[in-house]
Image 1: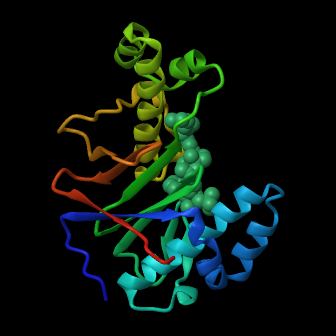
Image 2: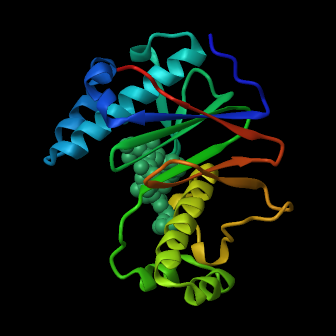
Amino acid sequence: VRALPSREVHVWLIPVAAAPTVAAVLDEDEQARAARFHFDPDRTLFTAAHGGVRVVLGLYLDVAPADVRFGSSDLGKPYLVDHPEVSFNLSHSGDLAVVAVAAGREVGVDVERQRPLHRPDGVARRIMTPDELARYEAADSDEKARFLLCVWARKEALVKASGQGVRTSLTTLPCEPGPDGPYTVVDLDVPGYAAALAAFGHDWHPVVTMLDLI
Ligand SMILES: CC(C)(COP(=O)(O)OP(=O)(O)OC[C@H]1O[C@@H](n2cnc3c(N)ncnc32)[C@H](O)[C@@H]1OP(=O)(O)O)[C@@H](O)C(=O)NCCC(=O)NCCS
């Protein structure tokens, strides 16, 4: 069984290429969801993500990946039915899925492939605080695109940690919550992606591993 020290938040990077190796562990419901994707890359990434999360969680829970049982909160945040003390969160984008796992603290993770966003200035106005927007507007165009995706990933990670999803007003949620806030958020260094990890409290650090199946 893999240890999960209370001050560590483990982050697993799962490449889309893991899909064929992990496809067999999906349950019926996940297989049906995968089959509904008409676009093959989306189906393959979904398979890698949901198979990968089972493989990763199986390492900590000492159960076969196919036997990991998920529930989902009223707002849709998945949790472990048999192990509520272990929290996890999943995100996928481009060719990559990312899973965060922690003991005794809520976690949220978001990964976004670096790409030009449609109407970026409108997105910035919808998600940024006034201070963030001022910094965005003062930046040159390369820095603008990088900063926008970074803010996006951080806020997604924060709202996914709290489980609140779309209910949160993003224009009043700073992407750098101070020491008084309940959560800490850090950027993850993943080439080609903006990625962020949020977790409850301030007494933790991330430990990043690539899931090596292939
Ligand atoms: C649910 C939500 C958090 C998912 O985010 P996403 O970027 O579309 O997708 P991600 O790949 O990062 O995450 C999806 C996974 O998050 C998990 N998830 C679903 N609902 C969740 C919730 N309420 N809280 C935390 N995690 C959730 C699931 O594992 C899901 O995987 P699945 O869709 O394959 O089953 C998102 O739709 C949402 O509510 N966003 C609100 C904030 C917003 O408007 N952001 C705009 C830019 S900051």
